[in-house]
Length: 543
Picture 1 (cartoon, one colour):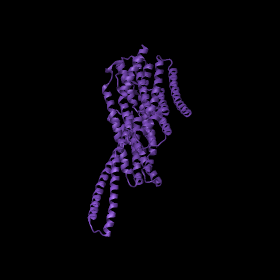
Picture 2: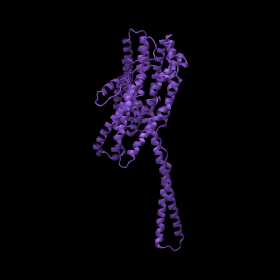
Picture 3: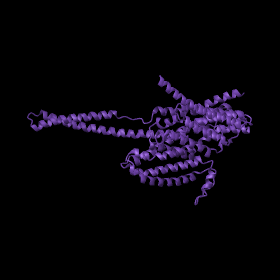
Picture 4: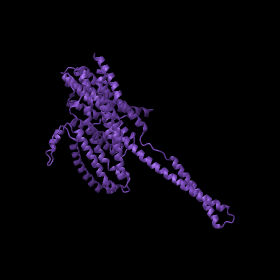
């Protein structure tokens, strides 16, 4: 009982410490917002919205960031502590350095803001309800260890609050249809690309007799492809805000001339990616040629070659996620800030630095306090991952976003990453099933051959036993035949036993798949219903 009491106190102490840090941050944001905007009418609304924004940012850190580092942790390429530190630094850096571009306050044109008639109050209430609903849903999903889309949570919140404020006609149902389509597009694309890369690595390296020689040839190529994909991805998704400054710097480099544009084009991003990929290819090839003498000819040794690329992948994914998603997550807070400060409703609003700071610090803090649960879920509770599988998932995350963004398809980074995990798991099942089928066919052939041999031995034994005058050699042959028949029966029995045991192994945990897919499907409607309820509550209090 004493030990149980000590364990309970220890666990509750840790939980209260986490809660204390979270509350301290939220109260600090509330106080800062209230004091720094003291002369503005309705500044209390803005302060409360900032509090909710801080709560939302922490939930993003706890739930969404796990997708960037979960595979690397699950494959043991990095420790949990290392992953949290790297992700927190790069998420916050991405948000503050490259995440502050002007954004549409009404997420992706989900609702028509003209329905508010320029009236700021119901608009502010709707945005507060949307922000709080999305945060509460993310909190619940994190408790249930279900990685869900932050974007879809905000989408559902804005839609539900908008319907409650101005009716169903306010919603752009065409946009909502595209978002619903992304529930299928994102995980399927991510899964296919991750499985394709895993199969390519297995075929070119793991299945070879001389794995080290194959690794020297192909690992530099795969790491260079990763560099190309990530630099392209980072250029397109993470450098939009500071692109003019980047162009100015690059144009100072001899023999480099880039045309000034508002944001990087796909061709420019691909060229920059190719330059980095070429440098990485030769660097990795030189390193491998000098260091592979100590490696053993095994899959485990090949796995270690992907450890450092995975660390870089986790860092770059975190930076791009911070740059791309933090503005979306705190968009409603920026909308409320604009409405309170300017006293009206506008279709666009720049995000102030302090709002970006709330998002960046909140994500880092939420990840550090509550992120490990989802990191473990993504990294180890869906399927078993090693460095090669985690590398394939990271490749899928970057390539799928590039393809989808150029095709104009709305995709979720969460769904892509989890789809990648599903993809490598189901590929393992497929390959194992093929091995089983081959093994079953071999066993059946063995049984058929052994039965033919057994029948031949028995027929010979019957003939010898029926013979009346037997020589010494024939008696010896009879004894030998009894031994051979016993051996054949033993082999047949053993092979039949092995055949019965041969069955399909499930490398992807079905319960986890069902739970995650269910959470994806109900995210938008759940956040919408919650937001509508909160809007009516806020309006009832204010009127």
